Image (cartoon, rainbow, N blue to C red):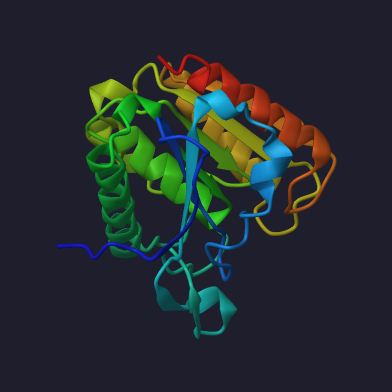
Amino acid sequence: MAALLETVETEPATKATASIVWLHGLGADGHDFESLVPELRLPKDLSVRFVFPHADVRRVTINGGYPMRAWYDILALDRSMPQDAQGIRESAAQVRLLIAREKERGVREDRVVLAGFSQGGAIALYEGLRHPGRLAGILALSTYLPLDDTLAAEAHPSSAALPIFMAHGTLDPTVPLSMGEASQRLLRARGHDVLWKTYPMGHSLCKDEIEDIRIFLLRVLGDPA
């Protein structure tokens, strides 16, 4: 059974009734997006808990085999290359445990947003679309859909109407814009509710994107009842 990941968490002033599980990018850790919480300016009455897990340390081929926090190995940023299916599935199972823990702590599954940046966003898409319960939504930033050839067979029916926010920098040198575009086209072709945004930036976040994320979160978490 997958082990529960260590996390960095921010708690609301009152008992949490919603949770955002936010996955960091390659080589970062759970602290990476901790400072974003106040920038999102979410209403206090939403009572949102932010959960920022640390990925396990593993060797990453594209970075010379150097060990770092990573959700899976990357051989190359080339979709024709083999993908680390085992690593992707192991990390998805760990994220599923975190969602289950939020349920145990009193947050309904349909009040959980699964978010991620870059490699973390890839896991958010992979797990969110296969998760056996209805989540509130998926935030996938500067990323792509991994193992997309297995989605048709593995997607859970509960994900069919799941709101998805995908955003990408038009100048991204790390995860090419074309990879994000291809993923959002595939998801839309399958009938998924994808909001796609691009910004004139590299592999990062910008002020306009943060505001759009805020609007999306208010859309999917706006009714705390």
